[in-house]
Image (cartoon, rainbow, N blue to C red; front, side, top):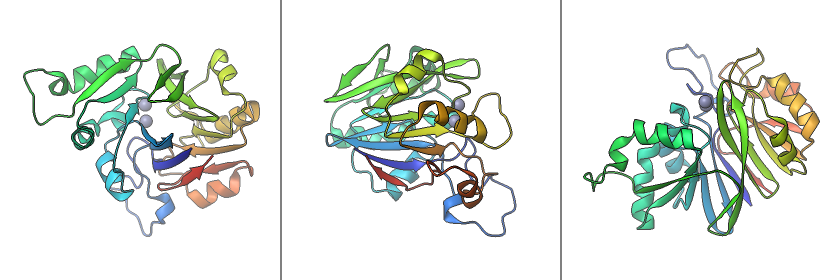
Length: 248
Ligand SMILES: [Zn+2]
Ligand SMILES: [Zn+2]
């Protein structure tokens, strides 16, 4: 399995528009959080943030076989229209998986996509509600219910890899589904606490409980400098960066 970090930034990306920057290291240039997983020759996209088109061009993404949505916040969905090209390439609808709440929001926020009168100029998508583990195109997916402040949203586990972004806490029954991981990608917004996201220290505490072989932090705010964070973290945890590729 290959995991490509398309983006590992927070909702506004990094750098933040309008803030003065003297110099900017490429590891601190972060687009909105998303990963592309390649398993069994299938390209599985998690979320379509506002930077999805840029990410697909930059990392030469040629096909998307299906999409897993974590939740409906703008930084995870507003690139949905750029699935249009991928549904043309596929010459078929692209299956998109999400929980009930996320599907409702996506159908409301992007109603033109699901309007049968509007036959052209839209991505062709099939939204499917995730309730339990499922197999799609030969790939087994385990949904992971997590809290994002008051919301119940989803992370996903595929084999010994799990992706958890926009997480304020992980319920006990989900903790049980996160044992024996080779790679965990985990939300870590900033050092100071945030009501909707894990802080750096909270992420470290969760890693201490789950003990995955390797953890990469994502959804990093522009306040987090890659090199300072790398220095701060224990050896088994690293900050993500756009373009990071992991083979597991
Ligand atoms: Zn987010
Ligand atoms: Zn969110």
